[in-house]
Image 1 (cartoon, rainbow, N blue to C red):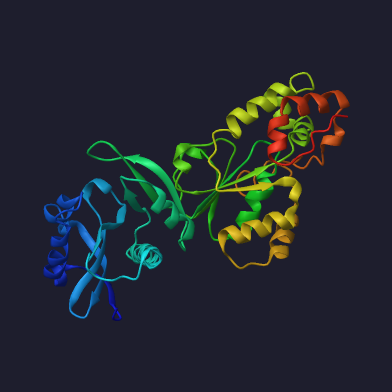
Image 2 (cartoon, rainbow, N blue to C red):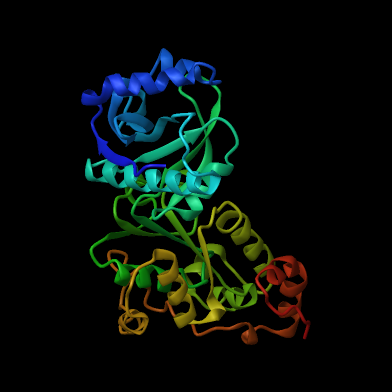
Length: 352
């Protein structure tokens, strides 16, 4: 197999080469896509590979009117059936290279909404999403002409910070604000807006518009959540919370603020600050000083009034409460009621 010549460019100079390659798809189950609707008029650029003077590989980035501002990459993807590409493992590597290179080219063209689709099994898309340089979300989406297809869509540069009340979401929100100091920051839903660009967003409730963002979720021992909830004045006023209704309050939290969430990264409060920030470092693939980030957040002063424009901190935000503050009766009630959830995250479920 000779050394191939690769190029990413517009396709106009190579239309004849592409048409010759497409003719090999005569017996393809999607032959019509290549022979009748090649979509040359909507093709922005493509990754192409030549062996000597013969085009043997083609993968396009297409922007149709019905796509809006988005661009579909790895479309009309095909190759010469008689060419020796070196086997399945090399095919996967080549496909991954194509995904990353077309993604980066699309970003350079100014596209933010970048996606790949398949109507058949999602397994190949799962492989791409797991091994790509970029972050992707996989889901089923409706086709514009009917039916459904599997899609991986590039996650946008926004981090949604989620968790039930009193689980450390405000701390986590400020950690991300310090990691990404140039990003916008807000609480989800302010001004009824759920569309963000390069933002750090705190939210307890899930919204389907979060699908294409990074969703970072933190959990905490529900018994410690209960102790903090019963001490935190805004929630006491909001829910009239007490030992008598704390089970119902926690149940409501889980149903509304935990169950609906899709979670890209789950952090556990009790793991401690350094371990959690290290997990964030691994997830984001960024190089930053963990201790400096933590110190920066710990240096934030508790405000005299609710700081909804910057840190999201309340005057009495930090309650220093833990499960040990609960009466044995309440502790045991919570442990029994939510044993399945506590076990899921490795918490001790021994009764007092």
